[in-house]
Length: 147
Image (cartoon, rainbow, N blue to C red; front, side):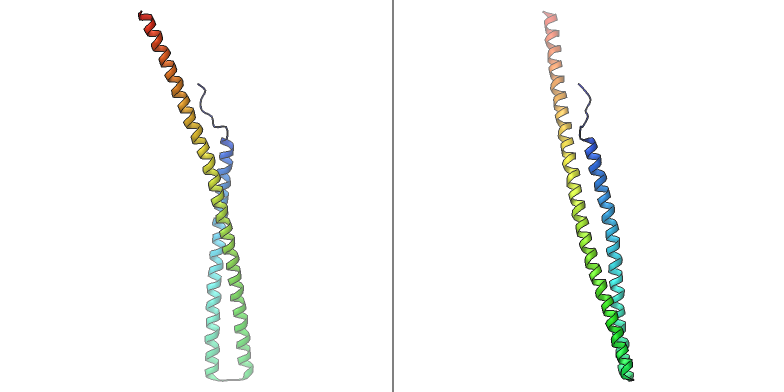
């Protein structure tokens, strides 16, 4: 009997490479998301510090222009924090898409591997069947010689 050769081996290799590429892409996107989360955390702390500084200025007293500058500064800090929130939300969506892509490529690999395993099992079954036929023929031949 011929040796086993899975005809879709190249497809399986391709699917595995696609899956590995999807995993790499997911890793890069997760790193971007994590850095966006750190940026959001820093921006939120900056907004909190700005509010504390504004309260301190109010307690100290001062000119209206100073208070207005602080409010404008707080508004700018809040806008920056909101921008970081939007960016984090976008990165999270990208992570979810990449995760779905990883799941899809993994399923494709599993399907091809299952086909390979079935083909291997069929090959082994056929090999056993042919071996059994050969053994039966040998037994018949041996029996015929003894008679």
